[in-house]
Length: 70
Image (cartoon, rainbow, N blue to C red; front, side, top):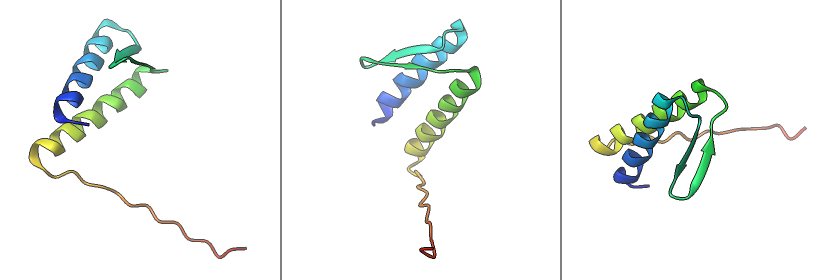
């Protein structure tokens, strides 16, 4: 996803949140958020990704898992 796409998605999400609407449509995809908290989390994630792309410091997490095979 490009910086422009993420910025556009953030703007649509913010506008919907300010109107009190929990369903948004971006690029032909419709997304419904169950709660405002869920929508706020999506906005925070977008903000973090946008900031990382602007500064060039996108971090990735690698989660590992181990098992004894029992």
